Image (cartoon, rainbow, N blue to C red; front, top):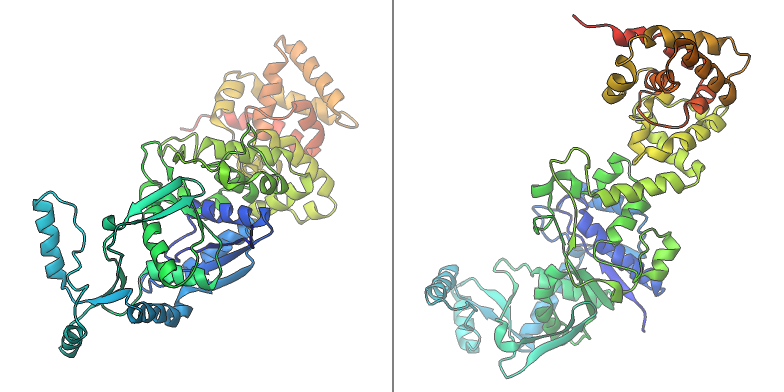
Length: 495
């Protein structure tokens, strides 16, 4: 295989979509696998919709995902002269022509085709105008577009797609397509081909919605004297109703920045997205960066559309459950030092970060993260479900409140008593905490779970978590005792 050169060419008309991110991931992996290069090219020819904010959002999203590029970012508008020169060259070689048909004429032909229940294709009315006829219309300032002259002899555009297999499209089924608008602006079809030729792109890995353009683009490559790249068209990602995922229909959940804000680990999102349409050929779902690069191949890309399992009104899952589970796996397994670095900005944002967590309390902080991360799914959970470990202004989960506290009114006296027993200990160890909790339960004739689960509610605000005896020993002594002594406040009935 000659040098592998791929490109990711987003249009800066919005955020970085997870579908676009998946395209970038596949290109990035393929380049890394083969020691090649990835070009970042910003296709900013839509001047009205392209914004600096969108460009920054794309670059930030790529950097957050860890998808480094080797060249660029290049901007398509910087090469407008090349695009126009290519159109002029195609005119000069007789492979394109000026079309003076008006919008009204084209619409009338289209309506006639609809009435006749026939497929509409441009009929080539201006294809064979003589030089004198063209000159006369230009002299009259008649507006025109430039169309590519598709061969009219018997034949077809045939190519082997690395995912979809052999594809063939007859010349007769391809109309003479527009490559330059009447305002003189070249269309995407031409710009994209010219840019790929200049950037020496060897493989075009993109979504199957680009497959319809491929035969026309191959014609342009050949007309411009270039060898077409290898095409690999990935399956689309659809929702449960088999519709394409989009911000209009699905909201922010399809934007990369949403996952960053919700507390995803960037590589966890990469790991999830790569599985939307690709398989390693076995049952593996969790990959390190090195493992994924080694395992990735175009042959592993499915032809079938992938499903983004998102239910818009499901309060339990704010995105695809598989994505959440993969992220939770990384929360549980990454080195605690790395986790601490990732959690810090979320605590800072909530104003519950203590600078001592980077100093004298670093060991305590990291042990806390290890204790509580088992049940968490995102980095944000450390500021919500885990808030009681870092702040006193936390909310007690309603289930924990009702089931483990209010269901047992005597706890408003028993838990302060437990606080006194703990306060009398020279040191609160897990063993001593267990002993005094069980002795308290025995003294009041209840199962140990009653005071232990009640203590969990008032100390951590949660219904589940690490061993309460470990919690008694690990959380600051004053916090444990104070929270137990304030149990009565949860039994106050508001008037």
